[in-house]
Image (cartoon, rainbow, N blue to C red; front, side, top):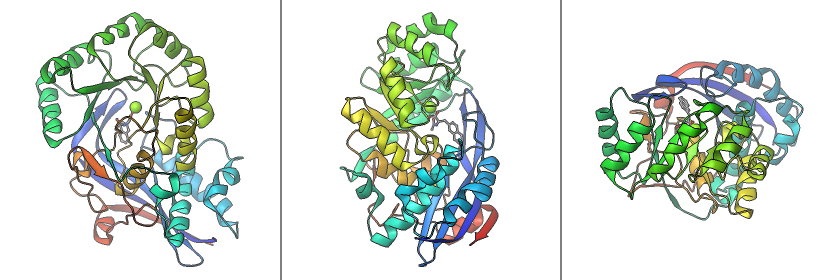
Length: 369
Ligand code: NPQ
Ligand code: MG
């Protein structure tokens, strides 16, 4: 294909309820959508999952937009016979910015698959038509509010609960949720790097609660502390922020820093790299699951395709649209018995609704070639 036009569109979506983690609180999501049009008139959609600020990850939305506009898009637009599989190689000499790279690769892949009439799920090797999903529950002001929130999600049908934790909001809420909802609840925690090496003896106490996993307790670069914690707890350690590529995943697994991997396509540079991580984990029996970045329906659709691969043996943070948004830019994804359907139309299998897209738009930047 040849890229003829690229639209970088910012949208603002209010959250149904504020989402608080150890790195901050949000009441709305600003997202960056990438729409490409090829010389043949085919359209492809991508979503950049960077947040406004560099708290969860170094990359941030306006920075990624700049990187796309100045370097990534012009590099790809210079190709007369562009293929999605070549995108990582073409962008390799531009350092970092995995979230911007993932967004443009996704748009190219979507356009390519739409032209072929093949779904992303089928292209990636999906083996399921629907997937069980979990819910990520933010830090709350009170324990009562937490119990109410978890209860509501379980009534809706979510099959696993992830509690965000930080020092001062950890053992007590975890114990309470375990005691309230019983031993059969699949429960896990995510610290978003809120602890340090001195907390290892304290974190061992999480072993009392039968958790599925402990996600990213320490700094992204501090694999060593994860190795030491993993050796001292029975609960599996899972890495999120530390894994920026398939190579990172291979290293972390080899040295024992984790035994489960959270795959977020934005964080690792795209769906193709995500499949590579899936493949290497599957080959060694390491469970993987799909993380969430409060995606719009565009990113949510693509994540469902990825989560339908056979090695995704744990439910992902791919909740129903209503968990996050009253009004998304696409048709909502609705939970049925704890599962979401994997889109099966060409490409990512969904498009924005023009009215909803227009209503949410805060800026549009058009690049033509
Ligand atoms: C995680 N996500 O697993 C992340 C982190 C996260 C669903 O728990 C705005 C956009 C706010 C993306 C807060 C979940 C966010 C965000 C947290 C991602 O660590
Ligand atoms: Mg996480």
